[in-house]
Amino acid sequence: MTTTATLTAPLPPGSVDDTPITFSSGHSSADRAFFGLLACSAGIVLMLLVALVVFLFAHGWWALVHFNVRFFTGTVWSAPLEPGVLGLLVGSVEIGLVALFFAFPISIFTALMIVEFAPPPLRRTLTALIDLLATVPSIVYGFWGLEALTVWVQSPVSWLAKYFGFIPIFRTLEPGRFDDSIFICGLIVAIMIIPVITSISREVMSQAPREACEGALALGGTRWGMITDVILPFSRSGIVGATLLGFSRALGETIAVLLILSANNQVTAAILGPDGGSVTKQIAAFFPTSSPNGQSELTLAALTLFATTLIFSLGGRLVVQGGLRRRRS
Amino acid sequence: MTALDQMVGFPQQQYGANAGQARLVARNVSAWFGTKKVLERISLNMEPGQVSALIGPSGCGKSTFLRILNRLHELVPVAALSGSVELDGENIYGPTASVTRTRLKIGMVFQKPNPFPSMSIAQNVLAGLRLSGTKVHNRDALVQECLERAGLWKETRNRLNESGYSLSGGQQQRLCIARALAVRPRVLLLDEPCSALDPISTGVIEETIRELCRDVTIVIVTHNMQQAQRISDTCALFLIDDEGKPGYIVESGPTDQMFSRPNDPRTADYVNGRFG
Image (cartoon, rainbow over all chains, first blue to last red; front, side, top):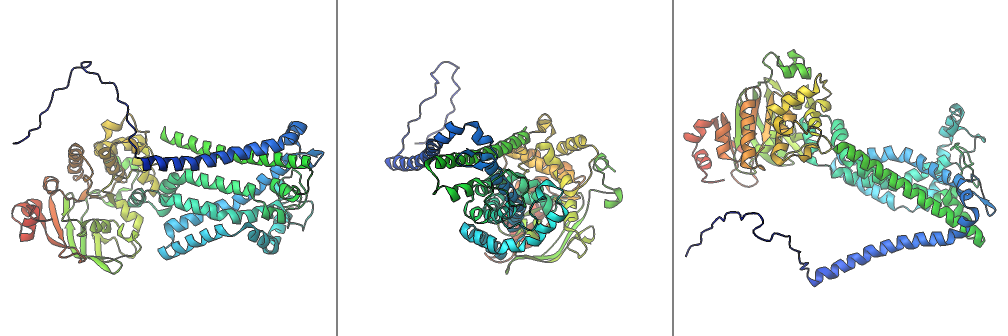
């Protein structure tokens, strides 16, 4: 017996009920158990974040109520009577910016070198080395910075201060004393965040569609043209993400900053001098020995740093999304 | 000098008075990936203003040969090559030949459409000029002319600023042809350009190829025997004897002859679908 396919004419509209059906879940018990496990893990992460913010608020509440806006606008941290977090925050951001100034170009160029130019054996070696650098504890970088880097950069920093001292950021009131400056701190933190930015950027760049890259070369483009027209636009949002992660790490870095930075904590643009402070250094140095009120002040400072990191992160994301929207329109 | 030449601003003497058509000659081209030889002394003439089809089963080196013709083969780190490829008598692998200038003269359209993801349709068309640093006097007219030549203008004229990725597969492939045409190549290489497309899109691209061959020498790799018959003037059959052996040309000649009265029985078997 043979079966023949027949075509049926479409029914006139409205002649049958065509409301959408509800899909039954139909998942197996193993699937449901696995989903439960994943949901628990995600829930734990979310709860940790909430617990962290609640803790910071609860412990910083006294300082928030007691000092109010003055806490956030005060430029000199003179705890416990007049703690002003702005000076410390500016110091932290300056360290982050100095670190990014050095780390960003080095990381992007290293990632491009690994992805596009290095022959396979060198590519594997460089990738392994970068990953290794990311695992070095920050105390090691801190010691190295204190003992070696401060000596090596003494001459170039002196030169900068001598000949470019008319620019506010290179001005210093104590010529010759550069070893506990925001600049040195930023330099060490830069070395710490280079592996982070390089590693993520390399990963994102390597995802750029090879067909489009070959297409650019096949059109008579140079390698540089392929990088600027295909790889970088494709990886832009990932690179921004990597940079923000690096910047957040620079803002939060404690050990190296504690080892190097001077005890001062004023708002200063002079990054070569010893006057700058940092939120993390202040907390690490004074939290254990502070009174309960002093600890509340430091906790509120930590909350402020947390919020600052969040603002920078969200700002960066918005910039990327804005760029993507402009590109699509 | 065509309107396109004037828009792009290429100096006339650069390509000669009969710009567009060029003879591409491969002489004893062998290729290797590491120690594995993949092509065995290929010699082939690709005549000006004609469509030359490269046919043969998968893995016999057609695409590798095509990539050798515009110096993409050397992008593979372990790739090696012997022999020469001449564009109007000039060896593109010669010591003074520039890779980027060679690729400007010999354009390539890939098997999978590859518009640039971050660019609009118009930007995609102009990408090659931007990449090669060529000045464009009238961008809009150039975009229109290239899209018209690629048979895509009517479908895209109202959405030139949308992403190239918003187009269908067939449209993306024609966008890639338009992009390749904008740099005004003398030879256009097409690597199975219709393999991922439906019959209607395939028909449009074939029509485009037939029209383009008046100005540009075309070399196309195809697995579709009917397509090779429909669009090509000359044909070359590539084969390999065994797995791991290099590919070689069994026979080449006018398409009519290759399909109706081939000299080699293997050609007759292949074009009639008895193997491959």
